[in-house]
Length: 309
Image (cartoon, rainbow, N blue to C red; front, side, top):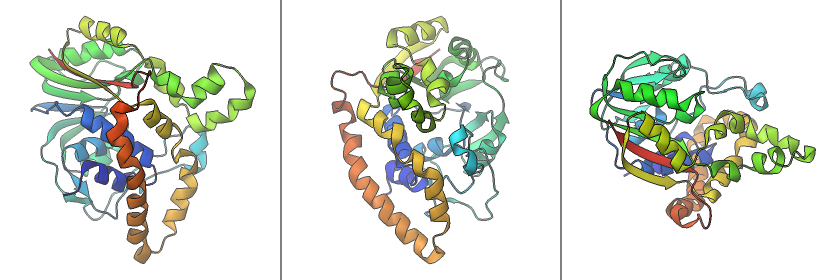
């Protein structure tokens, strides 16, 4: 049986640090179940939720088949905001359950997600604004974007508004320790030393986009309480080592790796990809199992909350 991590590596093989992070997210939210009507708030291309639901895609497919603006990669452009319709179905194993609504602000990503047969419908929208759903619309909601938004407290109240009484929501929220694990933050932002300015190309705007909303457990729980969301489950995950692997990973090499793999002869592509994934898995699987033991004196980088209205 193919594991979720093997599927993640298959999809993110040129960015294995993403597969590592996402597998630990899957493990952290193991107590959460979608019950209909359900919402994936900020679903992106849907691949994470699809793999978590037990779905699988063909080995010929990866997350990088539809990308654009590779020449602007170091200008903080979202290269994944592109869409090419696949003539053949990429799904080789359907997900074990359905999610009613996929919500995201990028239409191209939603189009990708709708190819996975996971979502019943999609809706384009900006979660910085009031969510376009009536009160008490959903029994379950998952979101990994609250900390990307301008005002987390407002969106938490919106989530509470559209959640039915007794409904549950699962949220991924960054801990205050996350900025401490960022090479860019520690070496350039805090020091102001211009010799580290080159790390801006490594960071690609991530520090200003998501680490700005990192908060302590006490701070997040105050926001959750103000939104009338009661905590029924909480775990922390993502050790300093995992974040530092992710912080660099193969990110700087991605544009050239993409160009190289595009030149692989079709008859060699699957063999090379398989060997690549087997090699990466050999080194990353032990890190997955050690995540909880690698924290030392540092708090993990993320909270996973399960909440009930």
